[in-house]
Length: 192
Length: 139
Image 1 (cartoon, rainbow over the protein chains, first blue to last red):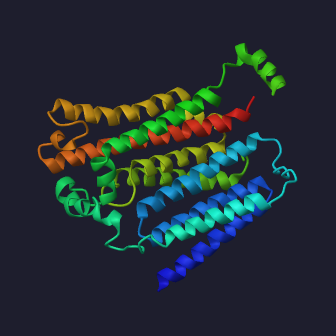
Image 2 (cartoon, rainbow over the protein chains, first blue to last red; image 1 turned 90 degrees about the vertical axis):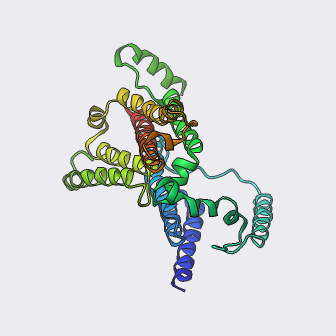
Image 3 (tube, rainbow over the protein chains, first blue to last red; image 1 turned 30 degrees about the vertical axis):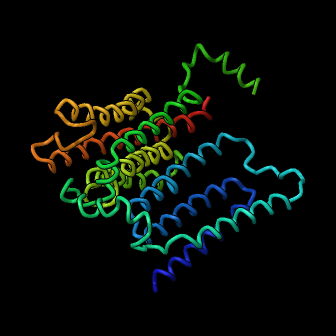
C-alpha cells in the first residue's frame, strides 16, 4: 500500500518536472530539473528494489551528466533558449498523441510488475537465481551476472566508455601548447 | 568559487568521504549494490568537486591529463588481460573459474579484477570528459 503511494507521488513529481522543463526557457534551470528528474527516477528504481540501477541513475544521471551539461552551458554565450520559429503545433501534437497512444496500448499486454510467469522471468533468470551463489560465491546477483555470466557484454561496455573518452579527447580535448598555437587559436576564433 | 570559504572547508571535509565511499562501492560490489561503474563515477565526482571549488588547474596538477589517458586505457587492458590469463590457464576467454584453486575462488578473483578495470576506466574517462568540457572555456 505504501509502495503505491510512493510510486504515485514520485511519478507525479516526474510528470511535473517534465512539464516544467518543456515550458521553461532558462537553460540553467532546465539542467537542474534534469538532475531532479534523474533523482526521482532513481527513487522509483529503489521502490522497485533495483538498487544497482538506482545507484547508477543517481550517480550518472543526477551527478555526472548534470555537471557535464553545466560545463557545456558555461561555454555557451546565451543562457536563454531561442524562441522557436513560428510553426503550427498540430502536426507534432498529432504525432505525439498517436505515438503515446500506441505505447499505452502496448503496455496492456505487458505482464504485471513482479509477475513470476512473465517471459523475462522464465528465460535465464531462474538459472541465475539458483546457480549464481554456488557457482560464483557472489551474494549480489547483479554483480555476478554483470561481471561473470555476461563478462563479454561488460567488456564491450567498458570499451564503449573508453571509446567515448577517446572521441571527446579527439574532438575537443588536448589543450594545445601555449606558444605555438596562439595564432591558430586566434584564427579559429575568427572563423567561429 | 575560489574565495568561498564555506565551500572550501565543506568540500575538504566531504572529498575524503566521497573517495572512501567510492572505494567501498568498488570493493563491496560483490556483496551490496554497486560495482566498478558506480564506483568510478563516485570517485570521479570527488575530483570534479575539488576542481569546481579549488580550480581546474589545481585539480589537473593532482591527476595530470596524460596519467588520466593512461589509466583510461589501463582499465580496459586489465579487463581484457583477465580473459587472456584465463585462456593461458586452460579455460575459455573470461572464464574466471580457472584463475583460482577452486571455481568460487577463481570467480571471486576474476570479478574483483574485472570490476577494478571497469572502475579505473570509468573514473578516468569521466574526468577526461569533464576536463575537456570545463577546460575549453579557458584561454
